[in-house]
Length: 256
Image 1 (cartoon, rainbow, N blue to C red):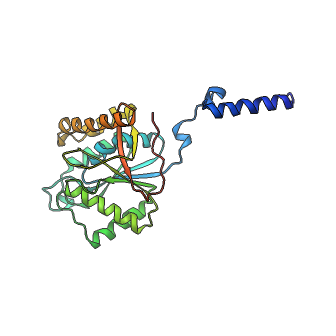
Image 2 (image 1 turned 45 degrees about the vertical axis):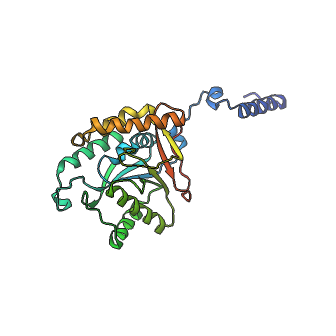
Image 3 (image 1 turned 90 degrees about the vertical axis):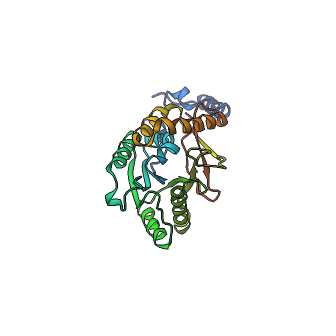
């Protein structure tokens, strides 16, 4: 091995300084390409929704990107999506199978709070139950519905999440997402965006996995939202989020 002379050392140091100053990527010099997976610490992310399908429509692209980078992602549904059932045990298996398929497409795990579609209860007992649930999961970040969505089940899960966030010491990052703007979410102005252009097809497949829920109608509406958020953020399609101002930092996927 040849010794490194002072002149060579100074030359190399100066060159690296130039690289840093002008923003030339390191792999352009070394040939190394750092993937998102190696740059991002593995974390657990929980995306809550009033019903099966809500997280997929509002965050499906972000879920796919987080899963791609090796994060554990859980889709936590308030109910099983069957308003005719008098109890969770009597709920139709159709929605459960659709949610299972959608989660497989997004590489996420489905979970349920155990309430009944259209009969959400938010009281002291349910707050306590939900706190225990999140505490057991130990998430690094939680995404939930905007608290003034028009659907009562959306508002319910949002309040349960917020209460748990407060009582657990604001330890996990808290983000709100939008779904079916104008029809459901209103007055939503994102603080953060995630480019979903490269994973849009997977999001679409996950949403269409909920075949009993008219995806041909609702995906068209949601895609109008993601295309608008793309225009706002400088990409083809994007999902928008509002981060709580007191939330800990959490690294969302960078632009593709």
